[in-house]
Length: 340
Ligand code: H2U
View 1 (cartoon, protein in one colour):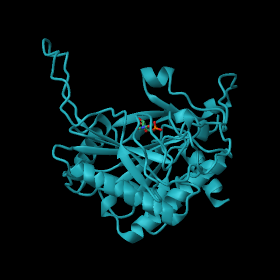
View 2 (spheres, helix red, strand yellow):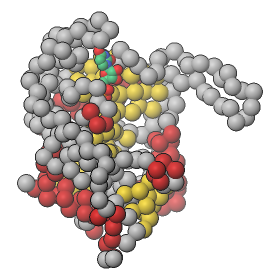
View 3 (cartoon, helix red, strand yellow):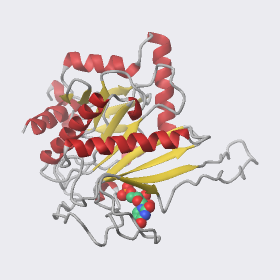
């Protein structure tokens, strides 16, 4: 067994958890499930799409004939602005519940049904970034909002209900589990080292250059040292910022470039519309103490090809996150795809 193929664990300082890395396992035979690559070309307008301009949505509302971005209240929201159910299980300290309220919105990136962040022009991606920032700020301003999470599910494999390019944004009157862990980790790091965790991490990655996929004057895309998903990437700004709204016009343009490059590299890797969940990790609302650095995460499920995915099952569900291909190899393959 080569050194590279030796199993080891890597620490994720943002989530305070370990990932088991077992590079040798990729040699195992695969007779399990293969997915159907679902890349039938789409038309630029689909009369049956709930998100295309002018169309009626599932609950009867009609979309305007929008020309750039379009955001609306989710017709099937996971949270409502009214405070959730009272604590009905208080009869035992182990049976805890808590009220939860918030808003859920949908953001369409473009009227075109057949595009994506990888094929849209830079100006269009900038419009999308602006819409993300505006929506984030509007939800963050609402009284009681403590966190705003923006995410995009791309592809049926990741549960996207519709191929029209869009994201969802949910605000909550609580800081959800993972952002709360990230906040604690970044605060503890600042208290101990006097600098921000992701800033120091980025500096270390730029020195080694092993896991960087693509970079420009404002942003870096890399496969995190502790990545769980085979081709997971993280987009980190070179200057500490806490929300998209704080980005200068130059930083937004640079981000638009990097987003396009990232998604195109994914699409070239296995020659398919690469499925992923992508999301923005902004600081909790009104809580900037100098520790949090804005970042985006792409979590794509594909492992060996357009049709063989990673399953998070068994050991990973019971014991610890695990990956086969090393983050360094994943980064090298994504770098090559980005350079094509
Ligand atoms: P996903 O593709 O990630 O599921 O996002 C689409 C969202 O759009 C989903 O949350 C909403 C769904 O509830 N939606 C509407 O609000 N109205 C519709 O008519 C269709 C879909």
